[in-house]
View (tube, rainbow, N blue to C red):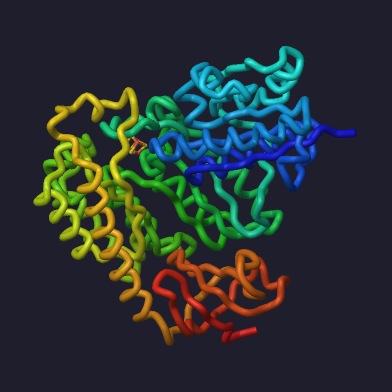
Length: 437
Ligand code: SF4
């Protein structure tokens, strides 16, 4: 009987994609996926280290999974991803029921590491960042038959002072363009039509004489590719050449998640984001001039050390100026080892102040998004039907601007492009119905 696995994923799209990779490695070694952790021989938790809260959640979940181990002796628990990379052996010291701690550059060796843990009764740690690991030749076990994430880059060469990623993912490594294009061609031949290129600063991609605009254009022109997105770009690498490709290539979606983090120059400088508010706004202007209907999203941190009310007001003002379609908003979380933790203790923003700012920011972001979405009601939009929605008998579809539309329809519409009338909005998502069969 084949061995079984269960993978749980926390964090970003790169982690979701990495979980597909881990599942692919396990499947090609004869492991079978099960539908509940209680039935698994191996449980892997793919983690995020970007915020303290995310790590606490994972530790709580891993403690819960220990119950499975007690009821099913022999089950192995592995912690993978950024938290594994950050804590290494400390993780086993803090949670002794964890058998394996596996960093992102060790996923190729998962079957061997699992065998080793079974033989030695746990205690397996592999968190070495390997220059030689290029992730080529690994089959991903894709969850969607409609859309695919394509990692084109790993690691990051920026050093934002709040960010743990350069420590957990190492320096930037880019994939060979031929390998990227071949993978997309293969997926397109199997019927996938929407592709999202992934990287920590995806648009800083460079390989030989290939840069990101060239790669994006080549992807957009592959047969069978109907939609291309990319995330997350760094504002500094958003060049005129890239905006031209976005505007010229029909397959490139009119949507971008462009992290700003703060609207205050003082805070941006302390974060080492390497752009000013004016420079960021100029990039937004360049995008909107070339693609007037582009939908913009962002990431914003409040309560960064030294942020005062004036800085925060500058962030609110920037949000009002850009009028984002969506924003991921966070309270600053100090990550051990990052430069921001060594800043003056007097600069620490009290929790209640940061929380108050976060709530004001969320309210503003929601208000703007709802206003923008309300203005779309009554219009017709092109959507790709992605999957069955979580509630009711509806299907979840997405516009090229990355907005969710819930529509009634049969399951065999999944994977189809259709035009839908937008009939209502909850503020964040739409309801609609097809105007063409
Ligand atoms: S660009 Fe900055 S925030 Fe983004 S991954 Fe790199 S260091 Fe982190």
